[in-house]
Amino acid sequence: MLDKLLQESVNRVEIYLSPEPYSSQDIYQVYSIGWNPDTLALRNLKMFGLPFETTTYELVSEDITYSYDLATDGQRALRKVWKTDHIEGSLYGIGFQEEVLPSHRFPCTTDISITQTVERKQYRINNRIQLTVESIKNNPETVIYISYYHSPNVDMDKMNRDLNYCFKRLRQNGLLKSSYR
Image (cartoon, rainbow, N blue to C red; front, side, top):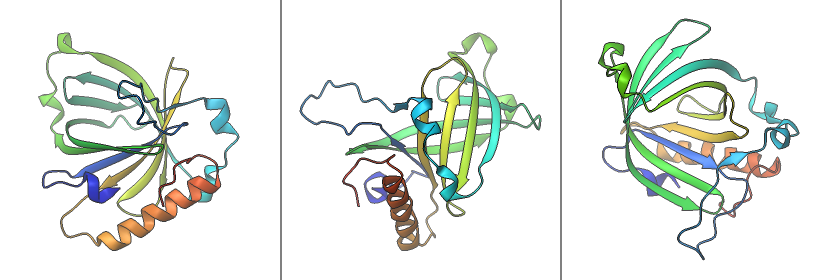
């Protein structure tokens, strides 16, 4: 899937896992990536090691997200520009151009479209790939996705092997229903 998402300016890929495979029969179908948290609680993700847990308060204005870590007082602003996407089975991949900005570049607070408290559990696969389980306060669904941080000088064979191994483990755990390798 990485080869379908990596373009010249893409430096971050997020691959979302959906509870149900996408059906190409209806082009207007809503593709849900939300999971019932009770279903996820029954899955054992410890096969990926211990998670790194964070809780952040996020403000979104257009394509810039300001994130404040509630535990460490860390602040950062990110610009994520959508470049491409691809659906395959129960996987929805998005290619972004991501840029870290100084926090003072976040626009006026009257332009905020989303405010949310996000809890994340991140499982490290390797130094460029991580599995993330994300839940937003007051939202009944949880989102699972794999993040890949791209660089032009990376060993793509190793990245594809590690990603396929991650897909295999997720399929064994019942979280991946796709026929993707």
